Amino acid sequence: MDMRPFSPAFQGGSMRWSRREFVRSVGWGGTGMLTLPFIISRGREELSALGIEGQTPPLIEPGFIRISGNENPRGPGDAALRALDGRVSYKVGRYPDNPPGLAETVAALYRAKAENVLLSTGSAGLLAGAVRAFTSPERPLVNASPSYGAPVSTARRIGTPVREVPVAADLSINLGGMAEAAQGAGLVFLCNPNNPTSTFHSGLSITAFISEVRRSSPETMIQVDEAYIDYSEDPVGGTAVPLALDDPNVFVTRTFSKAYGMAGLRLGYAIGRPETMQKIGAAWGLGSVNVLTAAAAIASLNDPAHMERERQENARVREFVHSTFGDLGADAPVSNTNFLFVNLGGPVGSFREACLKHRVQVGRDFPPMLDHCRVSLGTMGEMRRAAGVFAEVLRTG
Image 1 (cartoon, rainbow, N blue to C red):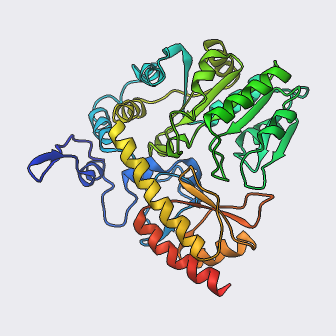
Image 2: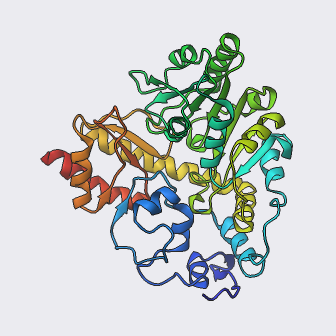
Image 3: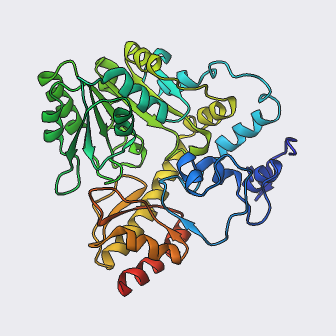
């Protein structure tokens, strides 16, 4: 594989980064082949679903639309790609130490210190570590239903009881029910915005919920997973990070797999009190963040303009898709994520199979809501093509 460095393309009188050149430089730029931005933006879930995890990049069937894994279809920003190229040629031959500056850069976003940040190769290790650190057969896990299922899977694997609280009629998390279920629990997992329902609770609501749990069950730990918060209506006011920095029983987890478009590079982090971070880290192996991932992450965090453009483009596509389903008589709650949870009024399995015949792949089942389909947001071009498929499938039954 040719790893020679290259120069940015000169376009329109100014130096601009050419993604095509970056892809060509690592040898995956052939027509119809899996591109590097695709690999970066798709994580283990998506690649495994395609049957290509751990394999040499294969040919990708042209025209197939994959809107099933909640990844960012645009991939990382140009600053991240430049940072990757700056490391790929000469630094990958060294074993990674603690990635210099990454924890500090994350912490600076919240006026915190590096000791408040726990890095992980993706969020999976953080979620598993939290369950193992804070639950037991005597101290259950509390989660909404449906919600992100990884903590539940870990809990059942290690023999921890699980208390699942059904979402409310509007598909928002039932915070009152979660607070009641938290009595005597080891850990409450609160996904905000919630996956798969796409609903979001304000910062004031989360603060009130945490206060109630801390009052009624003071030993219970509270994890707020904010994987999708950058796509929410209030990513700054809605975060629970300030609470986590003050309270050792509260911590927040985040990922670079969604808005930052880096699912294939595997990076997540927890933030909270140092003693809380130490307990999670000691409970489960979190892996070493590699030098390429660290470089891309730091560049992304230092490029807020790209994040704002990403938020705006996601909102534009989201509005189009929401209107499309509304015109077809299929309702979905207002989304604060990069996906919709659509009430089809019938079995999702039939809809999914019919869409697949038209080369559109939508999300899996989310029991017990088997009449709702999670539809991830692709590019506007992909969603315009998918909209025609949705219309044909829903109108023909």
